[in-house]
Amino acid sequence: MASSSSQSSAATAHSFNKILNQPRSSKSKRSGDVDEGTKKLRRMILVEGIPSAVDPTLRPRIWKILLRVDDVSACTFLEYVARGPCEVREKIRNDTFRTLATDRGFRERVREDMLVRLLDAFVWRNHDRQETQQLGFTYVQGMNVLAAPFLYTMPSELEAFFCFAKFIEECCPLYVQPTLEGVHRGLKLLDRCLKIVDPELFAYLRTKNLSAEIYAFPSVLTFCACTPPLDQVLQLWDFLLAFGVHLNVLCVIAQLLLMRDEVMVSTSPMRLLRTFPPLEAVPVIGIAVTLVRDLPVDLYDELVRHPYDITHM
Image (cartoon, rainbow, N blue to C red; front, side, top):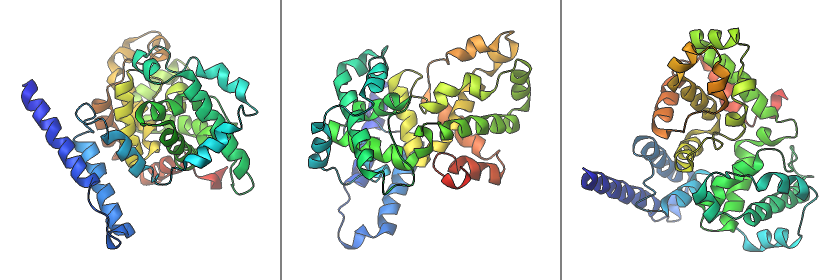
């Protein structure tokens, strides 16, 4: 059985590599062709998952494609690093030492100084760009946890920095505004979505005065990176980067549904919800995908736009 599973993983790795290694002639660089390759990657991520154990180079290469990161300038990154501590260094240091502190594999691969360096550089980058951007960025609560998967996954700090910057500035800019606007939107949407997909569970939590703001804040803020184990977080992020970080709201609901029976019979459900059970990416993704079909079109559209749309601020 183990042998057939490893053969299957090897075959999947080969299929991913085939897509990734397709030569890009000047003709095939047209957006339609690139999009076709990305569509294939997305489909494979959903159906097969990235077999990182077989080929550790796959995830970093795929994440860079999904994030459309092709320009990684070492000179630019080193110039930010050379400036030293940014204006909020103390705030950064208050958080970095406890980033995924219980995960031994993470601590062995990512030192605190790497996190500090990346976050300092990000603040400097946006210090230089504030004139040209509609939204400003500095260090806010939770950014250390959002940087962690990139430093763990990417082969270099340089690549981690540019992937993190693209993720923050384009995928979820409203999540890292000083007011955490996007996070609070996400939590309100979680309540609204839960009310539709499981009115009974929603009503029970309300009888205990439990809204998403109270029990789901860390999971929404960090796109579930706060729930171990890390290998499952990375698998969930493969899905979120492929199909959109807005789906994290439905992934949190999926985790609730997986513990629904215990929650419904508990006289004090907050005890259960304070620490979610260990993350299991495959069932969570499976449930999240089915939940999409249960949502009204206008609500789903709001969900899609909530991490980045500034028109309703």
